[in-house]
Length: 95
Image 1: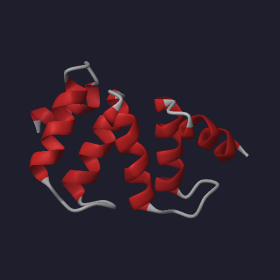
Image 2: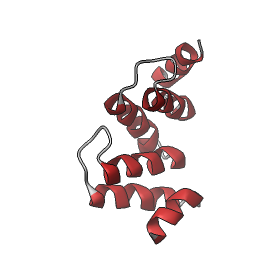
Image 3: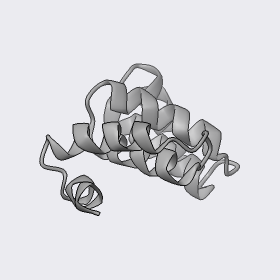
């Protein structure tokens, strides 16, 4: 049920709902697990400046999860997230 509400809000461009929907696809919670679709939802939120989504997208790029592995893209997304004081991204930048 929550997924249907996330989808309605995500389709209207609400970044936090896009992150929640991305997490649902990543974990297979209420939908069939699909890392590529998860990456698409995280990208939509990341493009709007959502720090958590930027960090998640960095993780996808560093690990090649659902998208092609690209360390340079990962660092770019981590950097955007870290600049917003998102601690997990700052940690990744330090690593």
